[in-house]
Amino acid sequence: MEELLQQVRDIVADSGSLKIVSTLNENGTIHSAPKGSLKVNEAGQLEYVEVLESSSSYKNVVRSLWFDKKVTVLVIGVDKRSYEITGNIKRILTSGRHFENAYKAILEKRGFGIAAVIQIDVESVADLDISKGIERQKREHFFFTHLDRLAVQE
Image (cartoon, rainbow, N blue to C red; front, side, top):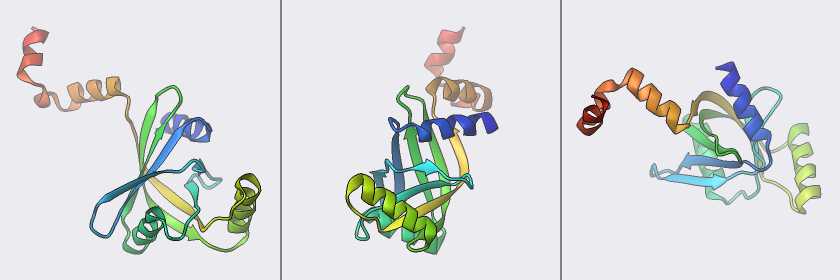
């Protein structure tokens, strides 16, 4: 698992990677949004900034914190390796030194401020490599194999 986590850290740190956070609204509908600021912080949590207080992502993240709902993060590297990370919202920072540092960094880089810094405790990481998925299915769920595939194996 540690090797997998290092691979995830490397992909998350790569500015060319696609990072998408998925949350649930009050009706259980999935909302997904790219979060280019996503990183792994010093505590090993995923962390990103929310820019707009009125965004669906921000509203859903607050709901996830209040009602202990999970969020997922899809990370796709430039080499097409991909991981799905599931976690819980740990903190939503709207003040304090850490928030202020993030605010100033985005203001300097992009010319606008932020609404919050979101911190996610990682619960699980799934490698979405299809060849690994096929091997895992053969090993753990052989009864899922379609009959046409069994005929080819003979």
